[in-house]
Amino acid sequence: MKKIDYHIPLYKDKIYHIYNRGNGNEKIFFAEKNYDYFLRQYKKYLSDYLETFAYCLLINHFHLLVRIKSDNPELLSEKFRNFFISYSMAVNIQEKRKGNLFQRAFKRKIIDDENYFYSAVYYIHANPVHHNVIRDLRDYKFSSYNSLIGKSNTMLCRDEVIEWFGGKEKFISYHTEMKRSYFSDNYLIEDDE
Image (cartoon, rainbow, N blue to C red; front, top):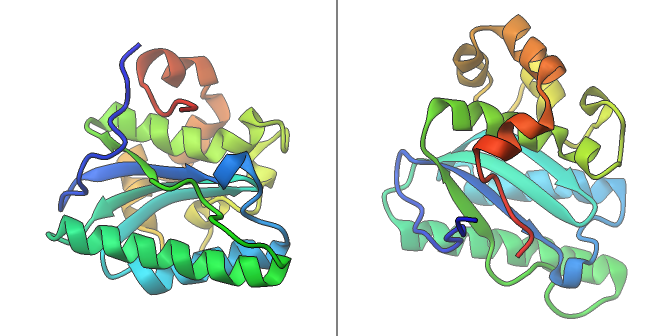
């Protein structure tokens, strides 16, 4: 099996699947307010440097699908570091814990073709089903799926994502009809290392 290079630089105009988990596979979200705070801090620290297409936050890990706007990979890595530190400090205070909340290096996989993009969007939205958190991805409130098909204000590149799928109905249909084996057989989305 091909190994993922988790430390590839974050280059401008490239699309990446970015993900990380709790240190030692521990929780990173302890209360519902943590999910909202994570997204607020994400927007605060990173919205000027990347565009967000999809996300999913689970109790011990998260997934992001983003396009890089910054032409300075070192600066962007620093912004990610500041984001993780900010979130971790707040959770550590809340939970009266010490130490790293996240695994040291966040993982990233470049999305380099259109079908891979579709598969990554679906994979991210279906992750709670894959981990047996829920049965229907439409019922999970800490993913971007409902924001993408909704009308309320969002930090997501909603119009672009929907357009790539050929419209809202095709986006919904893709998520309804997609089977996990399709993308796991054709694309290496992530592994557990």
